[in-house]
Length: 246
Image: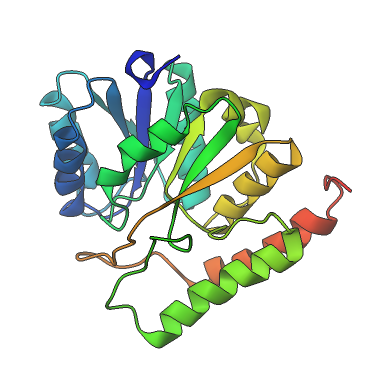
C-alpha cells in the first residue's frame, strides 16, 4: 500500500507552545500531503496553547484535531495518549514530532517513503547518520551530552542505532500495536529509548534518515534534572529488568 492511500497522523505534544504551534502547522500544511492529519496533545498549557490549537482545528477543514489532557505528566504519557487516539482514528502511519520547530517538517516525505519498505518498522529522523547534523548554535557541552547519551544507550542496549534518543519518528501502525504502546512505562526522553528497544526486541527493523536538528527559537526546554536521571536509569532497567529479552 503506497503512501497516497495511507492515513498519516502527526502527533504533536504541547506545553506552553502557543507561539510555535501555528508555525509548525503552517509548515506541515505546506507539504501539500492530502492524506496528512495533525493531532495536538495539549497538557493544559497555562499559556493558552490549547485555545490556539482549538482555533487552528476550526480552520483546518478536519485535518487537525486536539486532545486536551488535564495535567502535565510527561512527554511519554502525552505521546502514548496521542498515538492511541491516532490508532483509534484509523492512522496507518503515526509520526511523532516536537512542537518547538526543532524537527524539520520537510523530512516527513522522505521518512514516509522509507517506511514503504515492508521490512521497516519505524523510521528515525537522525542527527548522527551521514548527512545529519545538530544545531550550529549548540555549545560544546550540549553536543557532548547528546553524543554521550547515544553512546551510553548503545553500549547498554546494543541496538545498533546511531540516534537512539531521537524524538522525530515515523511508525507503522502495526509496529505500535506489536510493541504494545499502551504499556510503555518510561516518561520524558527515555520514552524514545524504550520504544526503540521494544521494536528491536520484537524483530522490527529501524531505519535512520538524516535530518538537521534545530534548537528551539521560542519558549523553554522541558529537560529537567528529573528527566535526565530517568533517562540514565531506563537503559539498565530495559536491559536487565524482568521483562527483558535475553
